[in-house]
Length: 218
Image (cartoon, rainbow, N blue to C red; front, side):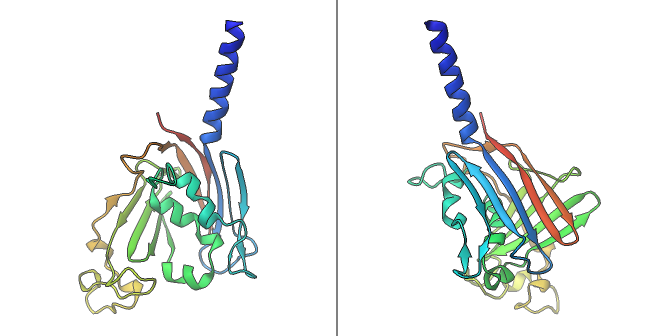
């Protein structure tokens, strides 16, 4: 009987660990709108979401903008991040209307075998830098810098100190990236749940893909 109970407990713990994993499957055309082909599919606990942009409602079909909070926060009360904020924001591109994403200025640069992904969300700029195998390690591949614009609204001029000489503060292309002081973008240190693992990125003909499974840390 004890042996049976132990086996059942071991099985239950295994199911729990699997249920706590986050799987991600993402596709987004960075260079041109392709809402019929872009998607954000993910699983967490009892949620298996296949999501994309719904032009009729002007929102995500499966409400990932809200539903993914169950994965990115440790609890809905404390709301401490379990993942880098930049990962969550990136995942929202395929499910958001273009009138918003155009203002987030997503770019992907190929640097040898690495990818440098950058975008800005309400005055905070994010950077995700893969390794040479195009892996995004959620512990050390993500960075951010806050308050680079005059206000944290959707559309706001760059602060003067971040503008290239002779540049236009209203043009994101005038951003002097050398002036950015990056900070690590990680899970909240006090979060009761954090993740480990790497996502695999790809970039072909302007299409960015991100896919993988993240496991609970420790």
